[in-house]
Image (tube, rainbow, N blue to C red; front, top):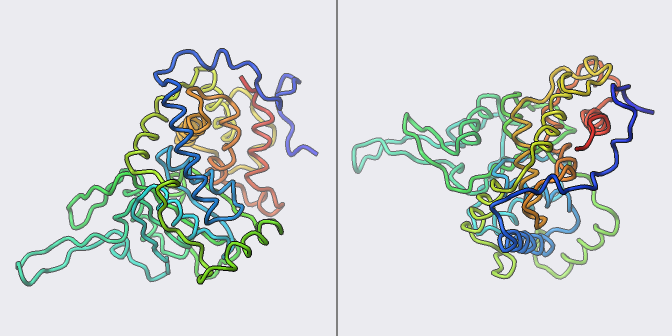
Length: 357
């Protein structure tokens, strides 16, 4: 049964667009760039396969977010290797890694840093906090107070931190991986909408299959530790310069006018506008996705196209990550939550309603 009825032309829009001739046009990228980019992505995937069993969707979301220059929020119950995945990603790109365990008494200065008095020089000196790393894992971010959560906004938006009036640039690349536990509510604080919107994606992890879990036991049975190794391997890692290379070229991936309009139509439909409005949406959606979602969806699609060996975006790139980009930006009404309607169901209806170019 369909969640909503919609205004459409009665045509079947679920089929993928077959004709990509109008989507290609001209692009400054050549086959050597797309080929190298695809090979770099394969290196990262091989490294993940050595230390993480299953969780292919999480792996791809992490890689795409890194290349798109964004940040990611991961929702899952404990014990699904979120920390391991973050460590592997940092080792893949030969970058520094810091883990911050969020608690209710965590202060902004514990994350960003503070100024202390140096008796030797008789001056105030800046001590940068654990945010000064290429990959920062904020474990259980919803356990920290709103004040502490907001301290991350400047870092996530601008790649810089202000300590005692001094603005300090953070390492490049800089990526935040935040996690939250969906089942615990006591002692947690809901993330403000402004910060949720700064996360390019929200990935939802599920339990591994029985086969994957057996493979995990096989991998760990001969090791001294229950934690998979995250050591760097030259054959399955890339440099920070390679990350910059991927990011720069992802921005050059061609995206046609028709695909841009498709992105805007998807996002606008979530807030009751667009060319193909959905009946009854206002009773379920309290707040739709902002224009920042359109930007995120475009950047993610460009990264997906580049890592797939293409220099142009196709609608399937957008549909593949529409849920990850939009699910945390669509706020449901209390009535919808009471009826068990999730934002993913709304996104399903939007994708089915908006025609593919």
